[in-house]
Length: 191
Image 1 (cartoon, rainbow, N blue to C red):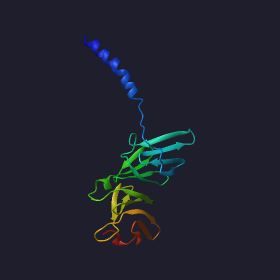
Image 2 (image 1 turned 90 degrees about the vertical axis):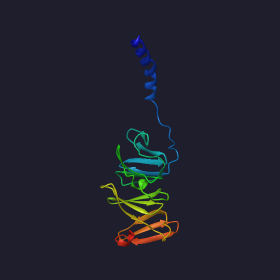
Image 3 (image 1 turned 180 degrees about the vertical axis):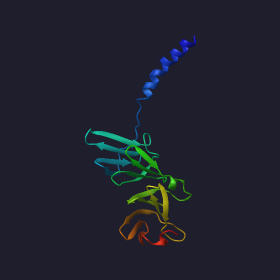
Image 4 (image 1 turned 45 degrees about the horizontal axis):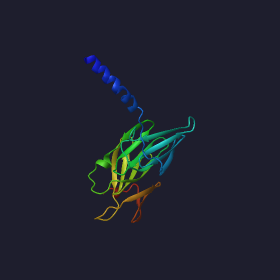
């Protein structure tokens, strides 16, 4: 009797298990607002994930939280040609290289009481400059850690940083309150 019940259970559940393995995600990737190139592969991204196109085999690959990323609601993407740097609305940060991802959740987990949105990511050598709603967070890519935070604003209010520009001597920060400039080597950048 037990063998019949077990056999019947397997026969009933087997088609369900096979169908479950054929499911796919249906995330909206149609409204791409970011694009770039990794090696020879172009990519585009939306708030829900990325997709890449392979010219040789004509395949489109989706990269989302379902298969690789650590979060949803992407706010910005940047690349250095080998890696994709992904910032999220909640302050989370992913670094994607090939089929691996490194997550740096330091901004997301910080005690900042205001929004933690990463507005823009700028890479420079081995550093990422994350322009956030409260300042600029500098991350060492190799050590995967925050090395500094620059706050711009008044004594009572930090300005949201929309983007930055780096040259050999200066760091320029664009905010809703204007453009600010500071010497990159100045010890007073961190206060």
